[in-house]
Length: 139
Image 1 (tube, rainbow, N blue to C red):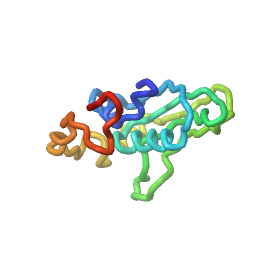
Image 2 (cartoon, one colour; image 1 turned 135 degrees about the vertical axis):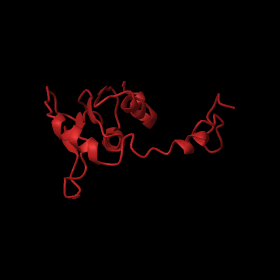
Image 3 (cartoon, rainbow, N blue to C red; image 1 turned 90 degrees about the vertical axis):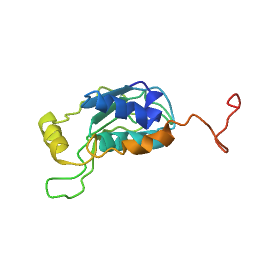
Image 4 (cartoon, one colour; image 1 turned 60 degrees about the horizontal axis):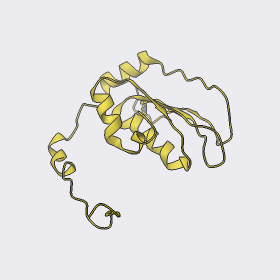
């Protein structure tokens, strides 16, 4: 998915529903801290690996990869960060996702497509925009 798509949870969800196991995100923007956190969440909630490449620079960089594996087999929470570069690091980074482990994890855990609340989507399909979220040109 492209950088703008990563701003929305629906993009990763659709890719997962279409069979994605790893989502690659070419990116080019700054203010990365909340965006990196969101990518970790996309990996967790969709049970997919996520890799994002971003040009280095002040208030930018932070290329990263996240595993969907957030619990070990004993149910102990584990950090799903595989790689998180700083703002200024430049180079080629490698990440090993361990697809056998990811596939096994997906077969036993509850996120992804296991217990989606599709009956709640009706309200998500409402196209009306209400204050305080109305922006110029949306009236």
